[in-house]
Image (cartoon, rainbow, N blue to C red; front, top):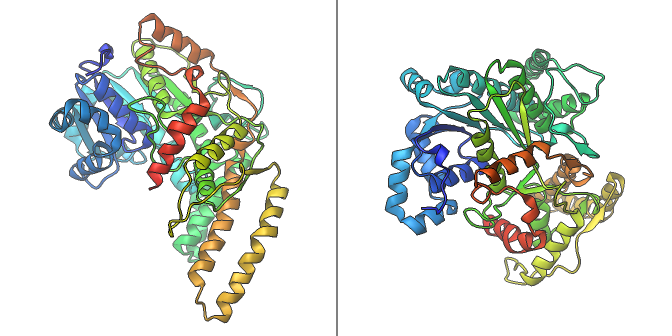
Length: 491
């Protein structure tokens, strides 16, 4: 299908977890496109049974626009046959024993057949419930490692983490692995058993209080943020991903561990086509709200770096790392940053200017068909105090007025009031969670990643597996790929 293929993947059996996630979808499509002679792709999918997993894979992955290139070049019948022959979606959950694979015969077969494991399963919510984030990002990583050790042919486990486990926002941030129990504030020791005990105690306390499901969710989210900040991390996501890395490094024994740490993953740069995206990513929520005319300001430093990296470049980094390490053992955990802040930095102000230019040229229309005009780039607020003051001056009085009108009109405007209140407090909540990403002045070092690029060039794979952000022209990418892709997804 492609003029160049990844020969090393021919005849290989690969297990990919989190197979319905944004990154894994791009990964599966890429493998099937550049090496259709792969032996088997086992895809772990959360579902009630294997038939449901197959149905979910078909509906959410194969039927998505992502597979249009294969579909258009080779035909629907070819794609269906390829998927039927090469892809085996299986019901599972990495947070459970044996990764939730209940069929013992299937497990034993996988232990004999699998050559490569790529763990991309995670919960990426910044303020996820602490118990859920712990189970997926920490216990889940441990379960995948245990499964990998049972696979007779597996020599390496590749794990997808996040560059923001470093917790810092200034200086050169190295590709350095964590030591078990290490914290960012250096004044505490991180004991995983203690953290799990704290979760259990909180559950017991909430049950004794007959907490509602909503109250339990709020309490567990707050607990995650409290524990993260106690140990020096900004949010539950980065905190639990860091713990996941620690577990892998501590328990790896003779298994090679390779960790990919992407920065903010954005839509595809080129493959299979520019601008494919699913879900509203980080600042996209603010950009789209701006285009719809409901938001004209943001919290962040316009001069700080926005470290974006397209999803297909992250996938190419993953595949390159597999090629480089499948038969090359290292005692140390190997870290690769997938980022742009060092070699092709982008400012927040550049991104917001792109949004202004895009929506000026491509204005949205409201429900009545009236054009929504953006009059100026979004206004930045560089401190939380000034941001909250702006909201309290311009939005809270309107909310109070709406509350009064709602009360005197026998709650005729109840839905409008609740929706507006929810949006205002959600905006404040989001800005607090996104703070590490919009006040970022550092650069993720790429010593290892640069060596990986050179290694791919030596075997003439640098074009098939391009993950060099220096080739990206940011204005062109955001104007013609990313923002249009985000707008298309929203509709």
